[in-house]
Length: 520
Ligand code: ADP
Image 1 (cartoon, rainbow, N blue to C red):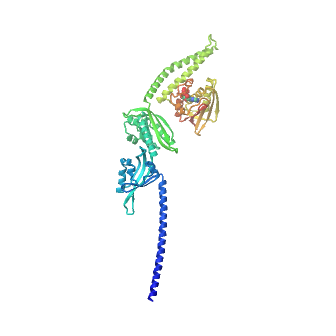
Image 2 (image 1 turned 90 degrees about the vertical axis):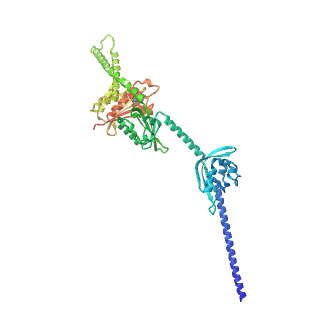
Image 3 (image 1 turned 60 degrees about the horizontal axis):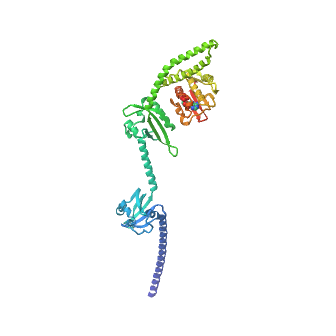
């Protein structure tokens, strides 16, 4: 009975052992599987590390033994690929003098990671020191007991980027020195028009440092008489994102105002959005003084000439009348010559009155004698007058609208004469001119003069309305004139709250339009 019991117990024991054996086998199998998985993963990780474009190495222990180093870092080190297992500074002694050991020690002994950007490091390759730039991080690596066992190094070669940055910095320095060196006053403003930079010339002229100039309102240096006009023009340029060009009196460090030519242009970025305003102010005081001298001289001369020329005209007309009364019966045939003298005197009188108008504008004495009249009638009269005096001109007149205006009849006539004589003068071949009276924007009357002449280049279009401006060309002397007709025309039309519009195609012809508010 007892023996039977023992056998039974032994059998149970054997069963248990069998079971344990099976469990252990299963466990061993699982471990093997786990290890093979780990190996696979390790292989994959190594694959990632070795194929990465980043520079990766693991430095083990206090001697910084190179445990592994991927291909890119081997390439940069330039010491071949049999360096695993060697101490870093034995392989790359040149790194020691460049302070790398200090960074590594900080990581290894204190556990503080070290990161750097764009750090220059020189490696000796084939006996030559080659400088490259790196972004990198040194991070401490721990074992299971949290002891530091080495350093993981991940770096990126950023040499191209740094060289480009160097170039950009160099250019920036050159440009800022160039801008400071220039005698022109240069400033930059943000898209809202708030200044952010003034060059040295601005600071010297105003006697104020850049910070003060930035904080001050830009108009504080502008002459009070010009303030309203300047502010309006600047606001318009800002809202329409367009160039601006004006002459301004700007206060210097002694409080004296000097004439400047102020120019500003919007700068757009790659996407076409406004990024900066660049402005330049060039002192033109001397030029203005010369111009003013010229004007006073012209004023004096034209005043002095006016009386004798008018009386010559009177005498010529008297002589002509006397001859006509005698039915042209004189011993010498003087009548045609007297006719020509009269034409030339007429030209002289126009010139003198333009000169006088010029000084009237300067002294703000040009007054408009407004009256209500039919614009069509006045245009017709002028067209007739110009056709009579220029036999080879062919003017086609189109009344597209009937327009009543309140304006200075003679001054409006003067503008049209100027447009027509220019159309005639600057059309050396085909003197066919079209004049059109029409409505503009519902509230305005408009007169357009179109010619098929030499046309005006884009760059000259804005300038031809300035005093004494004449388009430079090899034919410059072919066309006589002083360059004040359009300036006067613009002043006259603007005093009537109208405007002048110019369209032109260089080499094909021009179209000048003036507008006047309609009298309802
Ligand atoms: P001026 O004709 O006496 O030179 P204006 O002020 O009338 O002076 O004109 C200024 C300049 O504008 C002229 O010198 C000429 O270059 C240009 N211009 C004016 N009208 C025309 C036109 N119809 N066609 C071509 N150029 C013109």
